[in-house]
Amino acid sequence: MLIAQANADKLSFGMAYLWLVLGVILSVVIPVAARTLRPAPADTHLRGLTWRQRLLELLIGYGKIGAAAAAIALLFALVFDFDSSRLAFLAGYAWDSTLQKVTRP
Image (cartoon, rainbow, N blue to C red; front, side, top):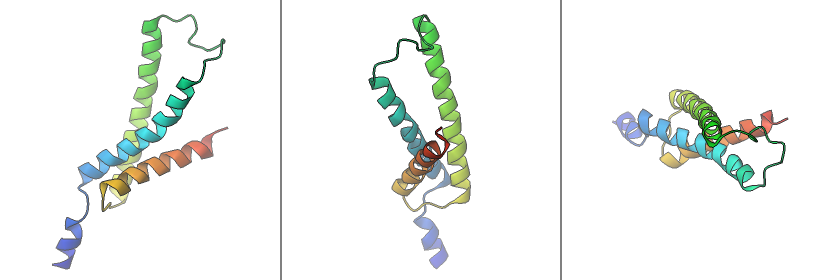
């Protein structure tokens, strides 16, 4: 009976996965948004590209981010049990934020 009650308080795998993905994505989007608000240097690699080429570059970049977020969230959801959406979200955010700081040159 106690085991059934303890499991009832846990997030389902799908909900934990969703909140983990959202945490990772937010951790990635905030620095990107901050860089976007700054003026771009004149020698940027996007200079001279058409708007369609720039849009494609942006979509490819965010596609890679989405794939990484999904993989990280899957790993966390398989390994850990989360009691709330807040904990799952913070776990995804904190893990990715820490990884960005450690791998930054």
